[in-house]
Image 1 (cartoon, helix red, strand yellow):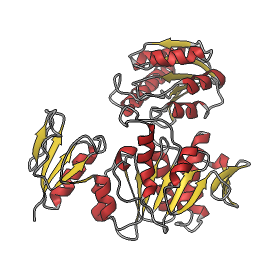
Image 2 (cartoon, one colour; image 1 turned 120 degrees about the vertical axis):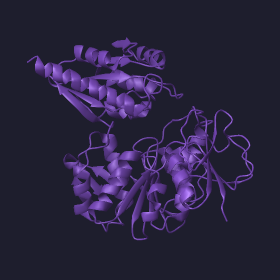
Image 3 (tube, helix red, strand yellow; image 1 turned 90 degrees about the horizontal axis):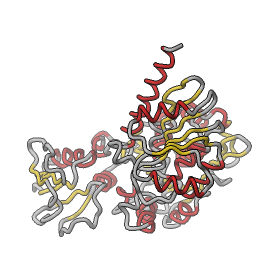
Image 4 (cartoon, helix red, strand yellow; image 1 turned 120 degrees about the horizontal axis):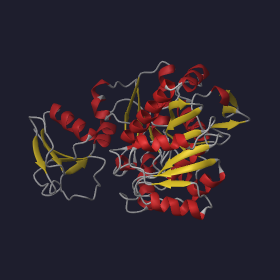
Length: 435
């Protein structure tokens, strides 16, 4: 029997879901707020501001992550790409959530599993819809999913191995409040069984509390029973894994991500130290995460555009002992900047350039913390990078780690990071030509 399926939202997951359900023989309608969207032939469409209305007559409603589950009314069954995948997947799933570090930790888990000879599929919030590879997944494979609060909010199942990293206020312009945000994150644990594994951040009260939702075996990374760092050595329980000096990633926050990944896969890879050390030492990070964009006259320019919360900007600042020039600001997600301002004042920042709608709020927080080396109001990345250059000396670091979302001045965090890298490399070329 042919089902009538409507896809709400036609982004990455929406496009994947439309193709997936069409291949199953369903009659697919695409619904999206953008009235100018081009829909492939073979799909019906419902475009414009009323796209979430009148959903009667459909057998299945497929929600994209950016659309709240309570944004529409229907008597039909509601699902999502994440729900559909987890219901159908034959392989064990390792799911990773948290406020920041999800992509890095998910990628590390996949790298370790691959180094141990496993067949691995990586998807979810990291950019690939898992429905794209579902037909190729076999029972002896492993799937690693990066999962956002948007994807988990209406979850009905949980991964075999569920990992929750640090948690801080985020997306409060979408979630009704912090409690709802945390409840959505907690769904990664809520539907586990006693045969599963719950991995949480033992140093994070919120992550620890959410793990209590799970009936599974629990391991808190950062604790002596799981992966942790002691005396410059990454340990798993009493076993020495590798020296911190061998790690490819920058920053103490990434040591936490490494410990989360090792804890999650330790039993799966049979404590394979060779696979773990090979993967962790060779992995230098994802794009826009403390990525070295250029080195100009002894100054490193780092693209950390993925840092869209104050907590991640703090982690970036603490990743360097050198004097730092930092670029802060963007669009408002309801964050508080008091702690970030105190870190800027106390941890070697010599100048802050402020951009975007949050610049006035960040400036107030910085001045309240006693920090006064501030320039505000740049809208050209080329000009911004040139002015960073003007206040640096050899041995300094320039950090694009804004602590805010990017919308307004830039399309997204990738566009912001790409513009920064292009401007830094252009300046590097000009510097080299002038020598």
